[in-house]
Length: 411
Ligand code: GAL
Image (cartoon, helix red, strand yellow):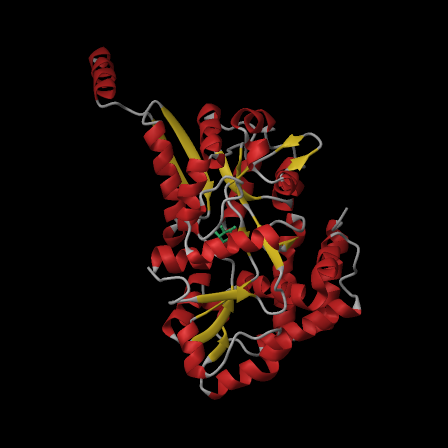
């Protein structure tokens, strides 16, 4: 009997074209963050119809929840086949330092990625021992978003710096009952902070903070926290309960005038909400940061012990390919780092981002893994809590310095 059942299942399995392999992709691109990844997975499935793709997502903007789950799985000997990780310190200072990743240099050489990606991006994902992930995009962190028609109605324009925003734009909007600047849960407030800090400190001092070359208690940094406090006084008071999408929705609804968010907000507005860049929404470099592109890059790596290594390698080849990137990025609200990317497939916002990326000075995002060790990046949420509950720039500066010392920031 058992023999018959086995024989039958073999026949059925064969006859139904059962999947022969599996591939588990782990990321935080769930729900309305999902379409770009799904497009990439569809391409994979078209090329590898016998492989069943498991799209494992843990919801939560900027990966706050996904990273915790990933850590448990990695440390528990249960790695996914490939996972989303930010290029830079989040990759190098964590998984590479712990010897948990495979060197992808052979893939880079075989697939022509060495020539396709800019050298400084390859540097961000490399150590002397190897190349550790395949970048799928470039996102910009320091973007100010608004609705141009509503700004006209309210009689305000894009502020030139935070001083102008605090002194003029904010009161003009508050007088009309409009939230000048909308923020959401903790990480989105940190996201705003990195743009304010960049504007107030300038590129060199901002970067020096993460290299351990500028103390967090320096008076210039304390002054940046003071400015940040004045900016926060222009924000909504129900921030903690809002996702980044809900914060964006407030601008679309006309309840708030501005927000500072990465350009996944453009992906959300275009792909999910069906809005038109330039007319339905406008953008500018966040105040005081014109000419600087604060970047981050989502990438995928190959963990040591990936159960389906061969499939994961095929996935990484697709992730880095021109075809894969030009399918993914127009939906995601990011640009492709590939030098041969076909810009005719990208909307007006993304073409302008590509232009800025080509000409601007570059700095790395703290909140999205580029600039600082993950231990610092995750503890920065506590620093922010301290600031939000005390309103004290000194307390925040001291707390940040304590974390920097504890994790050996810049070492
Ligand atoms: C970033 C990530 C983006 C986007 C965003 C919001 O960290 O790099 O791709 O997903 O979080 O969740």
